[in-house]
Length: 212
Image 1 (cartoon, rainbow, N blue to C red):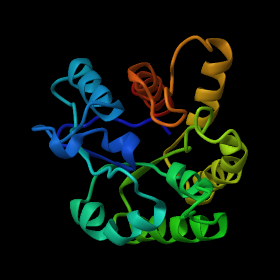
Image 2: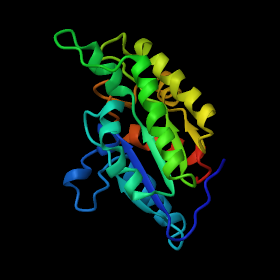
Image 3: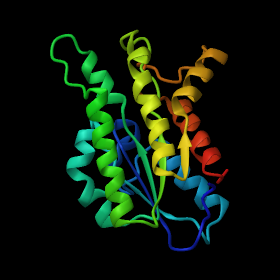
Image 4: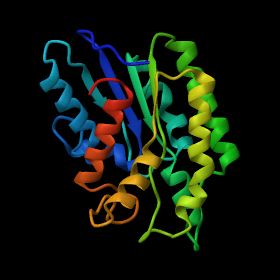
């Protein structure tokens, strides 16, 4: 379902550090990652109909953290388009040998269901864009991507179950990009995108929403 730009719309992006990307110290509040790239592209594409863009990403967040701030950071803002990218920390933090603090897949799915139902109940006209968690690859723990697979499949299923406007297949996009051009540092630490990685997210997001 392609998104349709209309004057006065609000697009809200929520997630972890990949979404946050310094937005809390940015005077414009959008950070220096894919959210800014999407906003600036839409500004340039159609200034008259370009949306107001809000970034509520917080570094280190898991889906359980989103749930705690969901009303204030999502429901109360009543966006026309809501983009959710979560799941990396739910897995990555569980791979820590000393103090694992991940979110098991059953809990991840349960909480994701709760917050999406809240959107459907309170904001039935809001269009939802679900983003797959991207990648956890070396130099991050080498088992990361295997551990991430159930979470990727869960987001795919949530898209079908809730009739989301779009699914952005970021895991597939990053895996393919690394296969095709392993010389490009898409995620220098194995998790956080480089500028090229953020551009990859931007392009995938705009393609899947029909806005490119």
